Length: 115
Image (cartoon, rainbow, N blue to C red; front, top):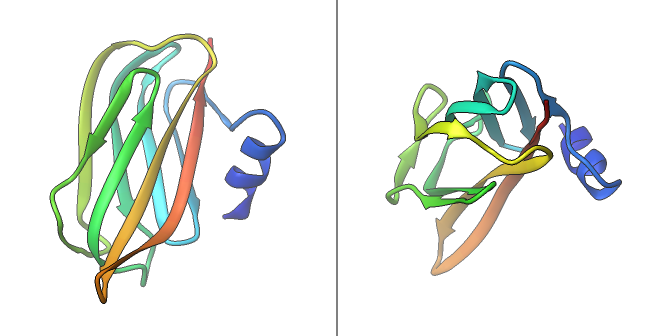
């Protein structure tokens, strides 16, 4: 799980060849597509990663927040893309728990779009 953050900190993220999926802490990102073309980017929780709050998906010209609510294991927030993203663009999903008037990160998972 920490691999995605460690790789990103080292100058890159795992490449999304025909789609990719990765998790960090309690947040997962899935990139659906092929080469530079991305159909959608999805955010979800890990097993036992339920939280109340929202997801933020960004990168490659995308910047979207989900609605605030309860996010359980089988619930997914998808952002439709339907286009090519720039080569080497990094897209990320971060889960944000809303608790006691504060926002707590539930993890940030990233993937690199690469031809």
